[in-house]
Image (cartoon, rainbow, N blue to C red; front, side, top):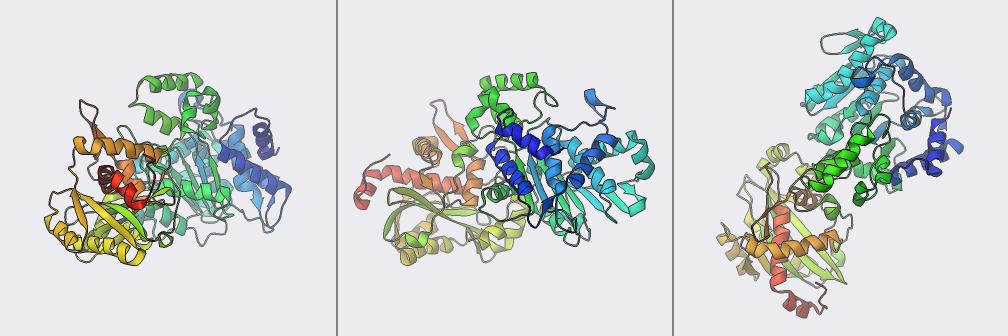
Length: 549
């Protein structure tokens, strides 16, 4: 049976509800089945892993312990998609698979069964199957489930041996092992199948990169990623999510990448039971409907629990409990070319760090009826590598993309910040009228800026000063009226920003419990917005704009 077509027919007839991205992916797959070219659909190869799993794999936990794994239709359709498209030599088309599905939909069981198939049933000589994660305990979840499946199968236990740290298949000299934390443990491997369970928990991008690179000498390697959404933004999860989305919509051409993103199409859909299936394809079978109803009921009355519900049960990308803004409000993929913006008046804001930390300079301005935000970040070159490890973000990549500049030596050079404002003025004709700053520790830099003809304005970092501008800024971001050029560092800082609320409902920005989280970009933007609010009428007069705020 062709489960891809069967599944798509149910989607098309609205007998099952899926996200827009899942529907689009299956539309493409059905088209490729009906219009073969370099790759064609081989039903026998597509069904082999399904037959293997349902014949040899058993559950080991809960109400299904000891029972054979019977795959859901959506799982069968995905498996056929992965293994069924081949070239004239019989080699698989797809090499990298992203599956995003809410918790309790059978993710780990599916991964464990597929890992065993890649070890035993794929007939690859010397196959190296690795499950990688940030922590060994996470990596062992899939491995231990696979180990239990082997123990319950007379055939598999006869041929696959449990060794100290792996499962070994002597006939083909193949093994399956869990790996974690230190990405150097992957060096020298020749991975046939790499498995990442809960991609959102991967904080070290090197784990993903090294796993993928270790497959380069295999003829038909497979990188399987199954995950729920997570709270940490601008990490490898968001990178792969955006990459998969862009492959789907045709922005990026990659015929080796396949994604199945089960999610709500709109954050508001969480209260509509008809939409729950979009993120939970096993709802009512593997995942209990009544339990989800109870969780939703709690989410309606418990605002602190709601972010967890949205993220883990509906794959809505959130920023966590206590965050200033939702990710939906923050996320804005608009871009612009600053070189096309000439003869502009702007408002500046700066968050100066301690001498060895991240500093951010910001300008905001109106141009042809649109608000724009442009930022530059600064970090000492000698501590950049250390900060990259501590913050778990790719400062070197961001430097190459032009979002951050490395100051020579081991401290931020404040003159570099001044030079950036001068560059905007002299190179792009963007004239910064006022620059907002936190007066603490900024005396020397302020004098330098004044000597270069910039008008400086103190912004006290308290709720009395910042609350009203922050609330207005939140509205502007939510309505997508500020184009910040899809700056990943600002997006990261905004998602890290939480608020402290006083008895009068006034707010100010703070870091969360994790004091290493950076909010410098958000604070610099808020400082600029505070100054804008102070001089809004003057700014309108000088720029000949009508008031829209």
